[in-house]
Image 1 (cartoon, rainbow, N blue to C red):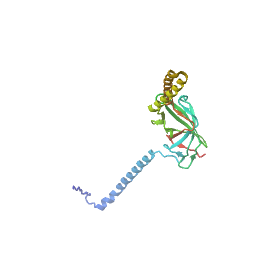
Image 2: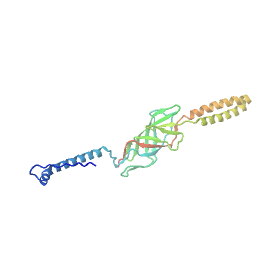
Image 3: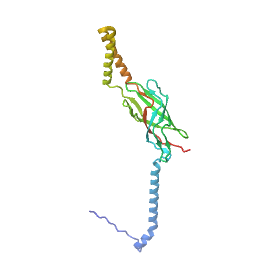
Image 4: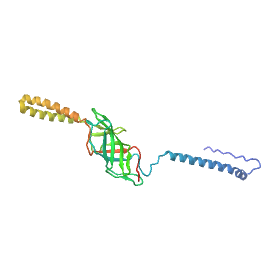
Length: 234
């Protein structure tokens, strides 16, 4: 173990007590400066942390809404407006609450048809007792809709599409129905022709239907607030 020591040399003719007494004001000034500096740094750290107002529903809150309008990717276009209603309470820290049933307005930001159809929804405003407030939120899920999924940070909704097994089942059913109809009108040759036609029609219909994205009226959407929602008491 290394021990380091140093002897303080006092001015000639000055005792330890005298030296400490003469140095005390300087030491106190240093301590005060250090204390003030620490307080300012602590104040700056506190100021950088955003405080949620007591009358605001905080950013990040998850909640449910229900669609009032049907959204069908075969018909909707970018910019089309839609309506929805709040499906559960939104409550601020001071107790101010938006009850279920409040109206919500939004618009379609993007529609991407194709193998995996996508739909991007944006929300504009929500009804309160004191007028409409801006609503900045993102779709995070579609509860109960197993054929749909939410993708990415922007909240796109995607249609998963039918599996190969589901399409094959539709083809078999279509072939059977086509064969029965063909046999009734044209015997064996009619049955064969009807089976082929029915299989092709059913397979095509299944493929197309499996890629359409339809959100029916009453569909529940889970949202996340992307900004504080400040409620007004008057």
